[in-house]
Image (cartoon, rainbow, N blue to C red; front, side):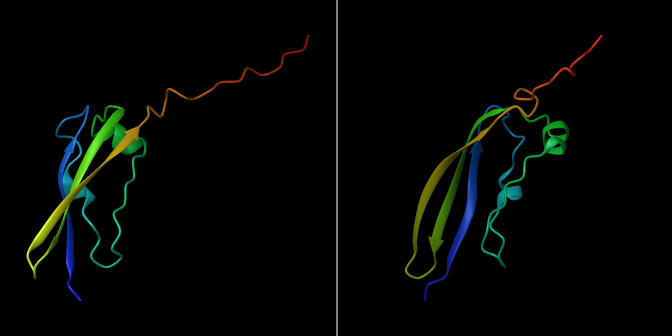
Length: 91
C-alpha cells in the first residue's frame, strides 16, 4: 500500500492571515481534519464571516504523485441570526 499525506497548503478568505493551515492539518491518528469555529475563535482571531477557500495537497512518495483539491467553508455571523422574543405582558 502506498501511504498518502494530506496537507493544507492555502486558506484564503475575508480574514486574510487569520486562519492558518497549521491549525487545520490532518490528525495522523484519526485521519480526520476538525473544524471548530465557536465564539472564542471569532473573538480571539477577529474572524470575519464569509466564504473561505481551503486548498489541500494529497501526495504519495512512490511513485511520486500529488494532486490538490479545494473546498469552500462558509462561516456565518453567529450574532446575525439570533432572535429575541419579547415576553407576553398582561395588565
